[in-house]
Length: 334
Image (cartoon, rainbow, N blue to C red):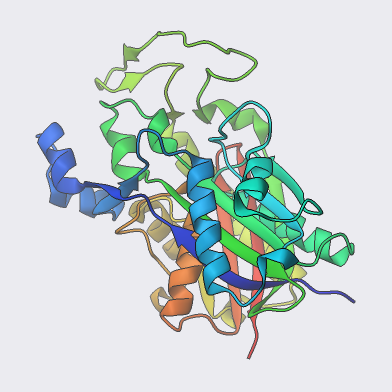
């Protein structure tokens, strides 16, 4: 039976940086220390004004091609996970195929997902390989959520950063991709949303208002109901983890490393305690990059590999916008 593996991971971070000190200057009621203690983030990278998710994905891809042992002529599919596409059409993946100089034999498409996007991408890539449709797949995640944030939205500005990642998925590699658990609850779609810019409401509504706490809220900017997202996460993640363990014929103690979506310090530490996961087995990497949406898990995986932490069974779990969730098991090859 054919198998699918992660062969290489690279990532790109924009040059501009927003620090907690800068945020504290804009919002004197918050100190840099308060922000760090609350969300576990000290700085985040911000895409330049004319830098798009597509631009960043291309930079991450070029880095991967330079670092990996696979000739780019061997890449036969491009998958891009983004909610920040350059155009309504065509798919940014098509633009990336051309900009990278990949062969016209490549399949290429975008898929619109956020915090669970990496797991969904791994699932699609595995299906393409097992189905004999592709052999070397470039899975990209790229997001510029900061472009959707209102300048006075101090809560979300402390959390989100921009980034792009590139993962080469092939018929051989350092991590075998195992079982999946994927799910969706679209009844919660409006809990994390940008309402304008799509076909439902193409043009800006300019309906900005301040909520009871003085925070800006409007259809033209990203809205996140933090409480609702937290409750959803606390409810769905334990059952997702249990189901993945069952499908993988493993017990929780068989997992050597857990890599969850790096949402914020409070949320993921709550999940760790809720699931009774040992700190040594729970990998966190967000202090210097922030919540980069679909890129958090591959960035963390890349850093865990650099730290020598990838071994045995590694569980990945993403959750958020959609509402959607996804988890998979990796088996690190000896």
